Each structure stands twice: as structure tokens, then as C-alpha cells.
Length: 539
Image 1 (spheres, helix red, strand yellow):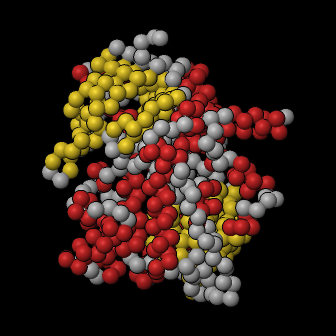
Image 2 (cartoon, one colour):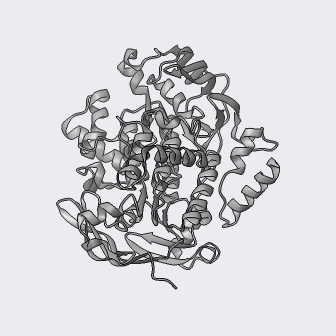
Image 3 (cartoon, helix red, strand yellow):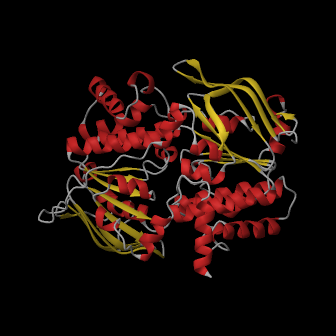
């Protein structure tokens, strides 16, 4: 066999918190051949992203590589000069980050950020780089590929932004691409196109890839081999088919067994006044309409799931309800009272009752504040808690989301994993003691074990406090697990709605059926079969 493109030996990485250094990666070995895709899976905090970054010879702030070897195509990255690393990164080694919104410069257009590396370091003209960018946008099924690059990051959806980042990584045809949860922000239908495009690009360019994900079904479609990590150590490694059919370790088997959680659906109390009612609401970003006569109802203690593709209007509906996106027509009615369309005109009590957990925790948390300050602010602002009383309540909330207060209270967001950051966002929303929580993709950044725990936590809180959830998600399995009522959105409109049992009982409406058929399965051949079926249907 040829010399490995990437060879990692006895890698050791430490992280700094509580005024001390603690091991994060504990002597991991890894080998990757040219053209091979290696899947890295494990729960939040297992060290997947840290290992992926170390494959570029890089350690994030608060971390340091303390031992081992990282050899890329014969170059020892841990001993390489900064100039050598700069020439490799972006050209021969590319990285697709988990949180696209935190990785773009908000002051520059997408196309300017896309072509920068190719023009400055790749030696091609601006015009050629733009032509190749448009072609990649088309391959990744971005809307209006010829013009979307002229937008700023805040003018596209989270899923679209993630695809733009994937296109940027492929721009220079790198030898190694590190995909860190590249489809986390994508809906299931778009995910299929992106997975197929990534797989084809890896084969076409002969690139090797590290594919980091907590979604086992996705990894099954992408990886030739799978490595399972836990607490910075290798648990198990095997080719994909063997790993799926015959996992050897108990921890690996536990990963395979998740997503069995189901809530008991609650009947819709139609005789009551809805806690929340959206009536024929319309909204626009500038001159571009994004919501068209949207209507939905949510009753006390219920969970209403809103599902649809990226750009379907799910998050825009959440912004409209919270007053962040003023309605141009229609109403948002809360407990029988019409709310002002702009949040700045709402009372403090109106603001307290509706809280929101955002999709991307990296951009939702102040990186300069400690966790105690982040969770403590709504306690002080809404409830007047200060000093010891505030800290005691923060500790209770941390315990509620299963994080040790003694460990996490004084940390900053950069010292937390993606899943831990999202749980902090959940605790911050709970701090205001709301009646309604809008959950915008709150489990999309979490591994399946942690996601199931969060769903159970939210269900327990609902049973104890009677809080209602508007649960925005592109994950069909999550809707099947927790929804009482379901709303399906497409292109800014409600196209299907009903109880969980009605929505998930055939025959389906065309678009609803498309969503359900796009849910990945734990079968390495699933994506090939689905693409073949759709190609035959198109013909």
C-alpha cells in the first residue's frame, strides 16, 4: 500500500481550565490513505473536533499539543514552520467547520471570502475563481448559484451558509479535507444532495477526508472506516460494514441503540384559548418576502414541531413570534392578547414569557463572559436575583442540564464542547422562567446520546412546569419522538399540519413524504439506493 497521506502517532492534546491543564486526547493513533474517508464518531466532548484540528497541526485557544506526531505527506506538521503551515492550510488541507455562522466575516460578501484563498495562494485569476465558485454552488444545490455569492452571511439560512463553507473548502481541490459536522445545519432533503456532492468530490479529486459526525447514519454513507472515540481515547475501529453489523465494544453498541425515546402524544385541547396563535402572518427581509400567510396554534403544555427544508421559513417564523422580524401583515397572539410586532415595543413581562434557544450556540454566547454571567443575566434582568441567590439558581440550572456547577460555572464558552454550549443556551432560556420556549434546532449540534438526554430533559421540564415548546427542526426522528402537533413548511408557507399520528400515517402529502423518505438509515447502501430511485423516478 502507498505511504499514508496522513499518519498520526500517539497524539496527546491538553486543554486549560480551572487554572490547570487536563488531557483531551490521550495517545490516539490514526492512518489515512489517499482517497479514503475515515469517520470519527463519539459523544460530545469525545475529542473528535480536537483530533480533526490536530490533523492540520493546529490546536484551538485554550488547548495545546503536548506529544506525538502528525505527518502529512511526509511533512511533520508539529515541527513545521509557520510559513509551511500557511502554504498547506486552505490549499492542500481544508477544513469545514461545524458552525458556519461563526466562521464567516459578517462584513464581507460570500463570494469575496470564497475566492480569497484561491486567488492569493492558488495562483488563479479572480474571474476563474468566481466561475468555479458558481459551479460548486450549483453542485451543492444552493439557490440562485450565480448571485448568492453577492449576499452577506446574515442574508442566507444556516443550511445555505454551511453549503457555502463546504464549497470554499473544495475550491482549491485539497488533498485532505476535514469535515467537522458539515451537514449538522442541513435539512434531510438538502443533506442528501450535499452528502452525494461531498462523496463525488472526494472521489473526483482523489482527496482523503476525515468525516466527523455524531450522526451514525450519515457516517455510514460516507466513511470507508469508522473510529469510535470516548473521553479522548480510541474505543473501537473497523471498516464501516463490520462496525455497523458487529460492533464489539459495549459503548459502541450503546451508540447504535439510541433514538428509541418517544413521548406520549397529548390531545389538542381545542376548547381552550391557545397560548400562542399566529394568524395569517407575512414577513419580509427588505423587499424579499419570506413568510406568506403563516398560521399555527400552540396550547399550554404542548409541543408543536415545525419541520421543513433549509430556507422554508422555520427560523423566520420563530423570529416573527419573538418580535425580531416584524410582521408586515397578520398577527401574533399570546394568551388571547395581540403582541406588538417589534420586540422593542413589548413589555418586560411579555419578553420573559417567550424565550428562544438559538440554532448555533457559538454565535449565541458571549465569548468573553463566564457561564455564571451568561445564565445569571436573565435571572437578574427578569427576576431580580443577584449575588448568592443568583449563583445558587445558576447552580440549580446547571444541574438540571446535567453539567457540574463546580466545574462549569467559572468557565468561558471557548472551554466547552459544542454540545455543552448548547446546553448552556437551554439553561439560559430556562432562567427566565418562561411559559413558551422556542427551540430552534437545539439538538442539531449534539451527538445522539446527548441529544436523547436533552429531549428527555425538556420533556421532564414540560411535565413539571407545564411549559410549551415550539420545536423547530429538520430532524424527522426528533419530530417523531417529541411532537404533539406538527406543522410542515415549504418556501415560507404552511403546506401540511396535524397531530403527530396523522402526519406520520400514510398516505403522505407529496412534500411531507419527500421529507420522510430523506431520513438517513443505518445502511451503507441507503444513499445509493435512494439516489437511484429518484433518478429513475425523474426519468
